[in-house]
Amino acid sequence: MRRDKLVVGNWKMNGIASSNSSLLGGIRDKLGGLDEGKAAVCVPFPYLQQAKEALSGSPISLGAQNVSEQDMGAFTGEVSAKMLADFDVKFCIVGHSERRSLYSESSNVVALKAEMLLKQDITPIICVGETLDERDGGMAFEVVREQLRVVLEKIGPKGVDRSVIAYEPVWAIGTGRVASPEQAQEVHAVLRDLVGSSDKNTASKVRILYGGSVKPENADDLFAMEDIDGGLIGGASLKVEDFAAICAAVV
Ligand code: PGA
Image 1 (cartoon, rainbow, N blue to C red):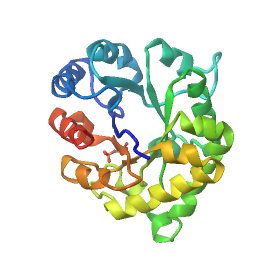
Image 2: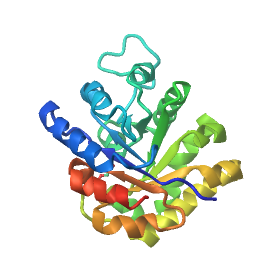
Image 3: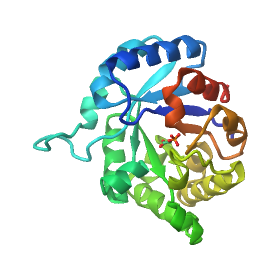
């Protein structure tokens, strides 16, 4: 089955209003001709309104980087899925490895977050990925399978059908050390298989992005692989030229 490719920028905790303004303006100028639904940027919470306004009328969708697993109430510092919906957020990253490792987010919490987003019709981008030790120990498949299994169990194939999965090997994030297209493809196939064990149709439809040191120089080769449906881009999404060049690899 042919799946539409998608490129998502993950700005992480970078940018301030003035630099965002030129980045968003540049992206808009460069990618104005892209088809709707091919590209998104996940910005820090305080800049959702700025990004929403800057991208309005453009084919680039708005995304967030995190959400609370709670609905509402006394959760100081948290941001709910309903709040994100107020800004017309289309995508939200959950379970990024930085959240798993630095903020102790478990797969159970990731599953609850995905569920909250789906209730608001926001597409979760469910991240999974193994560390270098886990890969070297021959555990990569097992680790990502278990991370996805917990979420799949919670939201079911119907929920996965409305989500995007991202495979991001921890050793490739921000390191300049990219997984080879074959290494990534192998894991993407494992993830698709796992989804297929509960629903074949969802497995053939769900988009699985690769993330970890994607650059204009390697995007074409990665995105050409059968089960790689685009990318989740960190560092390179902060540079207009690089992000635009990566997006050009999905058209
Ligand atoms: P990177 O980050 O492209 O800078 O490696 C990817 C990510 O963490 O989403």
